[in-house]
Image 1 (cartoon, rainbow, N blue to C red):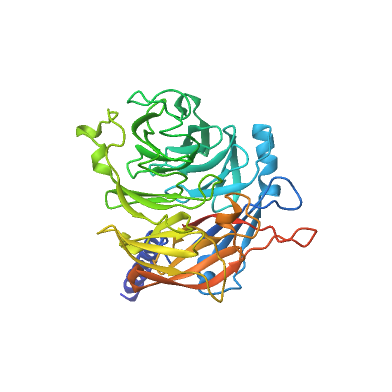
Image 2 (image 1 turned 45 degrees about the vertical axis):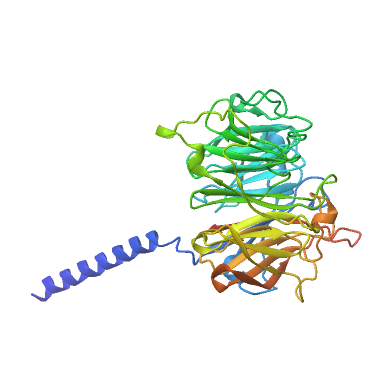
Length: 438
């Protein structure tokens, strides 16, 4: 009898252990364990390429100025791979994104045409692709099937096919959309001295269906592109009066695509605009798409424009549950807070103070539990963006405590990033930043 009871007890214990393992596996990505990846654009080890990825444990950034990072020296880890696979070296890592599963990082090099794919857990570079003139941003689609590349000075929108399970990444030349030459669906010139004078793409924003890409342009204007078509095709066009230039922040929330316009270029030093597009207006029955026959349709909503003083809208993030949209102002050292339900500015707060007199907040991302927002803070020698717009004095990662349910925030800490050259000059210039759950 005791033997049977013992056997039954062992079986129960084994079942409990197995169930605990299943629960642990299912709950592994519960937001309690995460990383913050920040990109220092400045060259490493005296090289003319390279750069550094700083990976922080998310919990160590909880209000601590002394948080230390794990460093990935791209001069050592990636340059050789890129030369082997493309024949050229990558220069100036700029923007970073993770695929939807967060198994891979996608890194764009803004001073060259390289897009680097890395295994996120192993920190291992896998594939390097040279798309041509200049890869400003490379954005993975939510469905995991492709990456859209903003080839800035090439004035091209390009597509890389992706299979993360097999680590297969292939540039698809047949998908390329020339943004400077040819005509739009309405018959207008794509690049036009009045309508759209400089069609260098800045940041493509891909909607949750992985079908539409909102492509901001350096000189103003916007193209909404069917990113699954081959070649990709314009379905809606906007001129510079409707959408101002140089936008690089944007996010989708509750059926709306938000995007901003910023300053920081020689011809347009100051700019702060936020627009909202209703995504349903781009869709026809059976999810079909056709090109709009008139420009500036569907009409965007101008949420806010603050061009009356020195400003530079850049990074954006949503607070928990998408209730508020935060927009970073690199010149004003502040966060502008927009309530997404009403599309009204409800607050703004400064990041300048005792921790940093000039943080120059650039890109933003939210912690998984919604309690903190992390921001890249620029250095004194910015390598991208006009110095007047993006010069800061505390290069690193800013830790902002979210307060009032997302309506406000408070700078808690700055994890400094330093890259001092042989002459004693700190050349660190953080830019790309993303949060990754483990």
